[in-house]
Image (cartoon, rainbow, N blue to C red):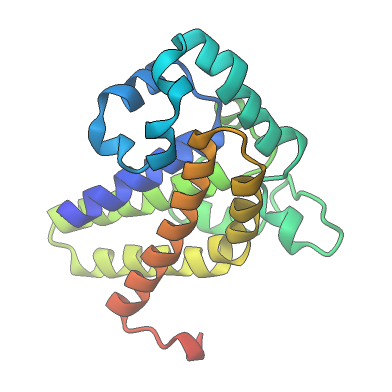
Length: 210
C-alpha cells in the first residue's frame, strides 16, 4: 500500500504541474515540503526561487514558461504525435476515450482547460485514477479487481503514454526556461519509463511478445 501511495502521489504531482499553471498555494507547498522539493534538484538551487516574491516568481517566470511549453511552442496531446496528419482528435474518436469510459474516468474540460482528453496532464491523472482503484481493491482484498487495475495501468502506459510522452517531455525539458519545468519533464520521463518496467516485471509480461 505504501508503494501504491507513492506512485499515486507522483502521478498526481506531475499531472498537476503539466496540466495547468501553478498558483500561490502550489508554490508555497513546493517551498515548504522538502520531500517534494527533492524531486526538483535544479529548482531547489535556483536563486530566484528562493529570493523572488511569490507573485513575481509565478507571473514573470513560471507561468510564462508553462505557456511556452504547453501552448505556444509545443503540443502536449497524444494524437498530435500519433496521427499522420498531426491533428488533435478532440471528439469521441480519441483513442483514450474507451479506456476512460471503461474505468469511469470523466474529463472536465472546463476545469482542466484542455481541448482534448489526450493531454499529457489528463493521461497522467488517469494513471493516478487507476492506482486509486487498485488501492480500493487492495483494501477490499479483491484479487480479481487488483489484477484488472494493474493490467489497465500497464496497458495504458504501453498503448498511450510510452508511445508519445517521451517525445514531448524531452522537447519540453530542453525548451523549458525555468528549473521547475525542466525538472518536472525529466522526472516525468524517468518515472513513467521506470514505472512501466516495474509493472512489466510484476505482471510477468514478455516485452518481446507485446
